[in-house]
Image (spheres, rainbow, N blue to C red):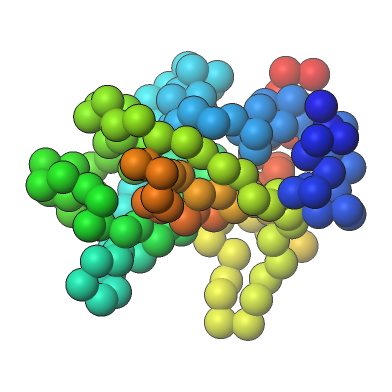
Length: 172
């Protein structure tokens, strides 16, 4: 299976050494929020950090997925959403910032296809600090980039970032 994924996994990543739950999250084609809730047995809050209209038909959105009980920051996501492909109710719920986009698509029975395009380590970029409060300088953050298609058109471009330290020692 990993041979098929070689084209999307950054060569410096030894995928087999990552915690099992992190490997699942990086490759899932379901919602990360539901997977986290099931694995950690706690509700996951989708904290909308920013949501900005960019042009007439595009929103840039940034969220943090946080354990409701533990306060653990499990994932950070940045999305570019083509809003002209959303119906009015989905757009209203998205604007409220109360749910992840995957949850909205599932709740509306929207048929989608997720295409993972890259798995890579994140590095601090000038002007872009590490979004995880609990991380220390040099902490590993691994990410996946993917597209969600609907009606055979790209609806959302997403980068999800996971602090490796939050997943160490789990399920091994």
